[in-house]
Structure formats: C-alpha cells, structure tokens
Image 1 (cartoon, rainbow, N blue to C red):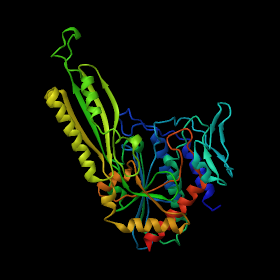
Image 2: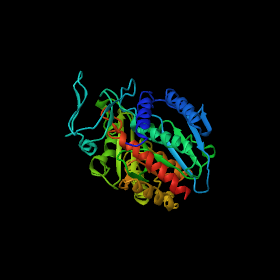
Image 3: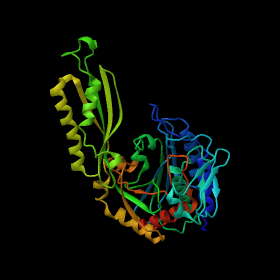
Image 4: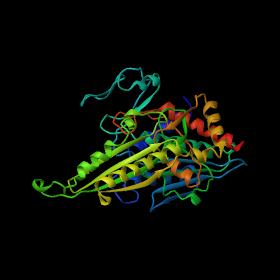
Amino acid sequence: MSEFYEKVKERMIRYAKVDTQSSNHSDTVPTTMKQFDLAWMLKKELEEIGCTSVYLDEEKCVVYGKIEANDSGKPLGLIAHMDTAPDASGTDVRPWVLENYDGSDIVLNSEKNIVMRTEEFENLKMYIGQDLILTDGTTLLGGDDKASISAIMTMAEYVISHPEMKHGLISIAFTPDEEVGGLARDLDLARFGCPVAYTLDGDHLGYYEDETFNASQARILLKGISVHTGTAKGIMKNAVDIGTEFLSMLPKYEKPQYTDGREGFYHAVSFSATCEIGEIVMIIRDHDAIHFAQREDYLRKVAESLRKEYGEECITLQITPTYRSMKEVIDRVPWMMDNLIEAIEACGVEAKSLAFRGGTDGSALSHRGLPCPNLSAGYENAHGRFEYVPIQSMEKNVEILLKLAEICAR
C-alpha cells in the first residue's frame, strides 16, 4: 500500500457522493446545474493544495488549475470529466469498500437482493486480493470519471508538496457533459495554456488510446401523402414504408451487434413515423477515414434511390459530423505515446493499446489543435449499478502520472 492509497480512496468516495449526472434532454450549459456542485469543490481543493491560475468558468462549468514549472522540459496537460452518465441514477450514491476481495459473488444490497455475480462480471477475478469501492446496487458509482479526478488531484498534491521533484508546466482541467457528447467543447485552450494533453477515462488499468472512431449523426426526414385507405391507390405514399425501406437497404451485418475491433457500423438510434411524416436518427462509425467517408456516401445513394422511386420531397438526409479519430493528430507527436507507454511500463503495468469503439473528449480536442490521447482510469462496469473501482488501480494511476511528468521533464 503506497502513500496514495488513503488519499485516492477518500477522494473517490467524497466525489462519488456528489450527484453530477448530465442530461440528454437539456439545452442548458452545462446540461445540469448540479455539475457545479463538484466544480466548486474541485476549485477550492485546487487552491488549497497550492495550484496557481485556479479558475472556475461560471458560465461553462470548466475548472482550471496549473502547477508552474520548476525545471525545463515538456509541459503536461491532464483532463477529466465531472459528469456521470444518464444511463443509471447518480442520486444518493452510497459507496462502500470491500477489502481484500476473495473472488466470490458480491452482495451489494441484501435487502433488495442485488448481487454482482462473477459468472456475469468475469473481470472481477482480475481483482482478487484488491480493495473495491462499490455501490449499494441502486445507483451507478461515478468512477467514470471520478476515479480519474481522484488520481489527478492526488498527483497534483504530491507534486506541489515535493518541490524537489523536477517537472515542466502541469496544466489541469475538469470539464462537464462528456457523457452526453459535450466533447470538452467549452474548454478554453488559451486558458488551459498547454500545447498537449492526456484525457483520463476508461476501464482496465494500463490501457491507452490514440485512435477512436470517426463519427457522424444522420437524420432522415420522411414525407408521405396520406389519403383515405379506400381511395389510396396511386396516391398514397406511406412514410412508414419509405423509412422501413431505407433501413432495409443498410448492410445487415454492419451493425453494432455484429461488429467488433476496427469494424465500422451503421446504427439506427430511433425510427418514428406516421403515414404522412417520419424521422430516422442514425449514427455512423468507422475507424478508417476512407471507409467512413464511403459509409456516408452510401447513405446518400440510398436516399437518392428512394427519391427516384417516391419523389424528391419524400426523403431528406442530413449528416452532421460528431467527432473524428484522434489518430491522425496524435501520429504527428509520437513522443506523446512513447512517453506514456514508458510511464505505464515503468510502474509495472503492461501497456495495452486499444482502438476505441467510441469517442473521447480527446477526439474533439485533438482536432481543435490540442493533441490528446487517453489513459484509462481503471474503473469497471461504467454507466450501471454494478460499477466499481479498485483502489489499487487509482493508486497505480497516480504513480503513472508522476512518472509521466518526470519523463516529460527529462
């Protein structure tokens, strides 16, 4: 047990109790005002441990802080998100610690008979002998991404309290609304003041990501003609039929449930229609930029073929970019990945790369000019009632961040 154990445990439990759930059904910034509860807490804590340039954007809910350089060397930026996912409740989170886990099923809530079973959650076997922070089975925990915040804050506190440690500028930011597609859009790069950064987000300690999906959203607007069914012949155009035909023309096995690894897909998020009007919402994903462009073009061809059959006004296709893979940006600064891999392995952890089947804040930030790969936080079962965080994973992430700062200073 290192000197970081109690600090990351205390922080994770304290942060988890703050409800910061974001919302898909809000047009405010941030999407929920309760995210400010943690933001103000973190601002105060950054000031107390001695960070400089501490600032909370009271309009955008972004927290900033710096540790000024005491030596030459490359700067280091660290970013994590404050919100928790809307997939499960984040209200009245009751974290507790199971010490020296023995590998058996875990009773989260005896009163409600909520049990986390090893046959369903096989990764539990990876943490035998470790100490797990869990919930009572009625809420998520919020390790995504409060485990990262706990590690960053503990690392920052150590650096400031050990002035003999040589390091370049360390810039820190905590952002809202990642879980609902915020993608750190309100991070002020000038105020952040660092030319490179790493996000911390994801499960499985030691995993890093320098590649994500390319992503777009497609909205297909359907317009039919409704008349009485008794006199419909030659007149009616049913928007339900048009939408169904559109979906049937997509490749059957290029969907999330049939793909993994670097395979892309089309995913119909929703389809609602009457005879007269309808809408399909879809997402398009692919790691390969050329294949991704081909997917978007295929949707255009499908829409055009239906226009020829049903009329120009029957279908309108709108494609909106969501994020792009960070890889083409990260590849321009190879030392970032070299340093990260060296730091992970120097701390006795196997460094594993993952082409992430999703997007991160770093995807958007990289294409805004801030190269930003990702280091996993070490939580498990995110977004659900069976989420947990091994304390040893957070403890090890503090060590990795300290080693990364040391390597950058070198």
